[in-house]
Image (cartoon, rainbow, N blue to C red; front, side, top):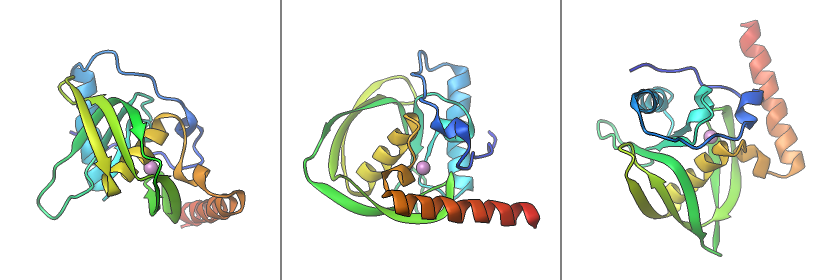
Length: 172
Ligand code: NI
């Protein structure tokens, strides 16, 4: 198991559209193990493979982790099959867009199908935090960041703040 470096926006690799996983083999299982390790190390609640530079349709989530009780969920080739008309606004952040938080409106509830870490087809109905997080991570698979959902003004403010933080980091 190893923690992999997380790509930070505006890294062009974050814009890639991820490829479906053809087979859940040993290489994919290692990637998943590393992604889980990387997510917890970064104190995140979700991570897509593309955020560690592997453009494959895999994501990991753990939205209700508490000290000592980790229950990571793995989604391979996830597809949203239904979204509610009702939407909800929640504050979001992203490990690839550090220190920026903003409100994003998304469908409140979703249904998704995916393969689990054993390659077994699964169905999930989700709402609340899990639905938000799953939609956020699925955006990553299509090269979309949460800041892309913000108004032009808010997005440019967020990206300026990010560029400034990157510069400071380089200088220190
Ligand atoms: Ni993210």
